[in-house]
Image 1 (cartoon, rainbow, N blue to C red):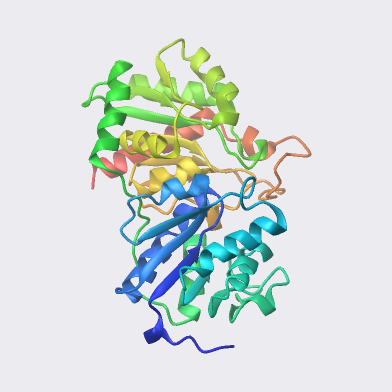
Image 2: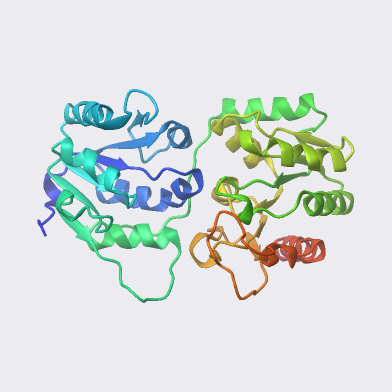
Length: 351
């Protein structure tokens, strides 16, 4: 393995992961990179959706957005992207995803130091290779990214998740909610029934509605329903069951608007999803419902969160769609979630 000469590193490219939730979990690693290389210029390479997440982040100097469906599509597009990167004369590429493609472009860009996990047939594309311990106990994704950096001597203080918003973005979120009757001092419960990976990760609309209704009554709270463009039907179902008492913003927000609205929430009820990790980054107390996914690796990285799940023999299967009876979710009852929320709220109140 080529020795990484830290003192020569002046311009760093971080190749971001491709999903919102995964990207949020890389933010402690980004903070470590900034701390370890305080004078370096740090650029992040991300898709259009994830790029929005990193706007105004103090650890990042520049964002380069790639478009696999447009100008960076196919072989010609990858070569075009590599040429664009080459003009920046990066000294180091830190490749966070495990895919072949994510290592290919920095190699084509002739970035001299290219470090990442050795997987997916990309051994020759990396100048520095990370081999995670096989057969070891499962670790959280946040720790995985920190371990990757530490393998190459890139270390720093342990930091929480971090996302940044501007005062104007927060003011716009408040104005949107006020237009729907939610005042600045109202207690807001966010409900996030979607999960972009697949239906196996989703709890049921009728149960979300029941939980929202009971907690709103108990806490004299207002309800905001979140969701992406593909989750409007689920959100509309919950909205209908709540008989017009909720504000439904599903499919109506940009990533930045979603972030600001989640930060405004006082409590969050959610599936394992990108918005769950955004809520954790903004220190919003939350209950996360897990079924098909492994909570040990992707649970909310927050001491103001609780995971609700049941032990069933087929979970975590990590499948997009359940091939049987979805027992990992059917066994999670409204009572379990409501009790978890009340217990967490009391715990936080008693601190």
